[in-house]
Length: 178
Image 1 (tube, rainbow, N blue to C red):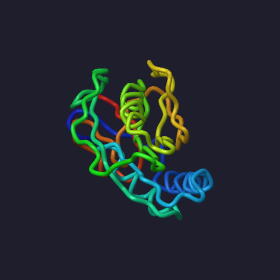
Image 2: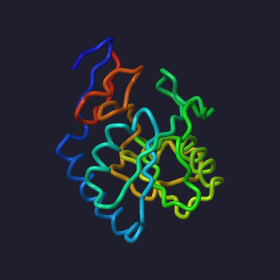
Image 3: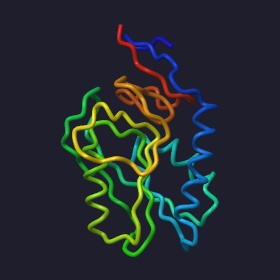
Image 4: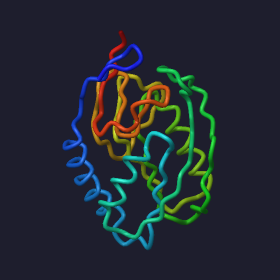
C-alpha cells in the first residue's frame, strides 16, 4: 500500500488480532469475575477499534468511557509530554476499571494516565495494550495484559495512525518510508 511517500507492510493479520482479543477477553473475565460493572476506559484515539472489539468479547456488565491523551501529535516520535485532551465523563471511585491502550512505547502516556486515574480511587485498576514495544520503554510500566509484542517499528492500522492516516486498515502494518 503506497501513500504519501511511505508504504505499509502487514505485520499482524486481522485474523490473528481477532483470535488474540478473544483469548484476552477470557482472561479479563476471570480477573474481574463477580464485578457488578467493569468500567472500560479507552485511550483515544488509537484504541477505538480495539476497545470496540474487546468489549463485544467480554462477557461481563461493562460501561465504556474515553480519555484522550496525546504525546505524539502528527510525529513518529513521542514528545514525552503527555497532555489530557478529553477527560472521563463518569466517576470511577470505588469501581473496577480496565484502561485500554493501543500501544505502549516509551510508557509515558500509560504512566501518566494510570497515575491520574489512581488518584480517583478506583476499586481495582488494570491495563491492557494491544501492542507492546518494550525495547523503547523509558519508564518502568507494563500493561497487565498485552496483545502482541512488537519490534521497534512504526506501526499503523487497526485504529493506530500516522498523521491521521491508516487507522482504517484491518491489520497492523509497519510503515516503510520512501
